[in-house]
Image 1 (spheres, helix red, strand yellow):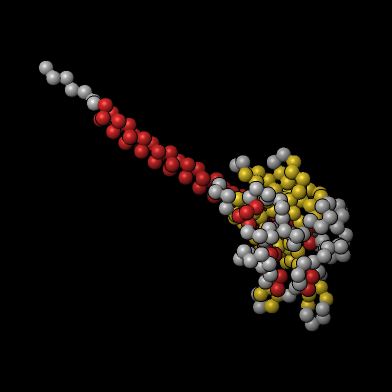
Image 2: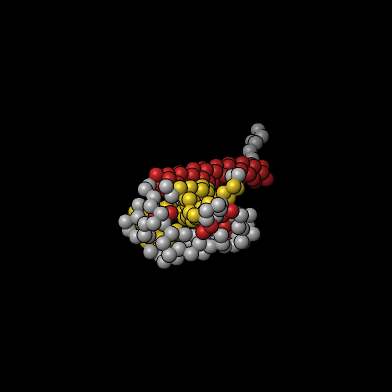
Length: 218
């Protein structure tokens, strides 16, 4: 009577096939998890950008108020602020605004919406080493959040958050500032805050959401 069984070669072939199937299955799970995290980061960044924009749009704005703890709209405050480039005399004509022209580091992102001076993907290890043109930047890491500080003085802004953790990764926020001028009178007619919220995805790639928020001085 013949007894049939598996040979060592057949077992090895079966193990190889099983390993290939399991490797493909695990890779699929990892890719799905990465997709979920990156999609969540994108949604959360958009949520933060909209929340910050709404705060700037709705909070009381006094163009002559000082940049102190009593200012209800610190993102538009410019006391002692040295505007970079031509942002202190910006204009918007036919939908084109002069503060959106400058791209000093040549990375394809206008400085007004760019938190870094250089190729942004290189800053994943030093994420709060932000550009000198930011008006408000992340500072003072406390637990799972960053505070907001004026970039020129380092003074903290009360009740403002410029960075928070999501699924183990930080999402950062900051703003730039421009002053709109009426070219006919050379008088200020409003200010624009460039809200930028950014993060580095699961592969270390720079991602961002930006929104300009305009307020008139009336």
